[in-house]
Image (cartoon, rainbow, N blue to C red):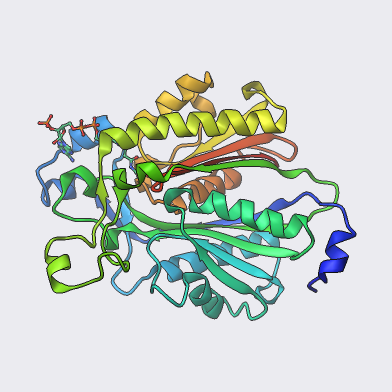
Length: 338
Ligand code: UT7
């Protein structure tokens, strides 16, 4: 039941736990060998420059909300909660089913989560972690009890399949988490979030908003597809994730030695290696799945969290660190005691 504002003020903040995770990727696999037939590229180039071997592509008619709802069902099952218990649904996405209604409202309809308030959050690949922080604020201050957070993207719908600089990098998928207060547990200890709008044009989709609406000419110029300055994005990714991780650890009063597992944004193996180097953390502590899924944008860190959780890469009481960056620029890092 929702608390009144007066009740909220009279109670101390409380810690918030991830009590269930889930993920979903589409069945269709697109390999590097298949991409060789689409653009002038090679398995050798893609593997050596990125670490990506294959990615998943949503079926025709399979939208972001469908993937998001499948991931949510798995998270709800693990958390042992029903759709009616969800107070709030936040979907981090840059590929919503529709400009409006929000993808979160589509997910609500599919799940039958009739008691939830719903909205989308736009922070590109950082969307899931930004949404975790928003959710934790609502629960910590007693506004809500149970929040469903989802990172979901169908980047195949905005990729220019003729641009070898970008089309080899991305895939589709969704990851979800249920956040709740759980007495006696530690949960999300801290999240550091930051943005720098000055770097907006290194990774963006120029068309489709009110600045460049969808017109035949704009579509002919492919302004409704993702554009990226790869080298600059690479550089900013290493810098921003390094600084976010360091700030989150400082806020938590921990060092890298305290961490059992690091779950980074899954964009490029060389970015993860550079981050490991910068933070002086052994690469083995990083959970990596980009070889199988490529970069799934807001879903990437959420899918990796679910995988690592189900594989038992950390146990109750362990400290883990999530760290992301994305278009905006946006970046963030959370320290969680599981
Ligand atoms: O969520 C965030 C999303 N984005 C990212 O994280 C991307 C960050 N950036 C990167 O991961 C890397 O910069 C890329 C993988 C995109 C590119 O790797 P790079 O080592 O920075 O390559 P480059 O852009 O410097 O390009 C080197 C060469 C160029 O040819 P020339 O000009 O040297 O003749 C490119 O045209 O590689 C060429 N190239 C390709 N060749 C074969 C670019 N894409 C491809 C390709 N296949 N797919």
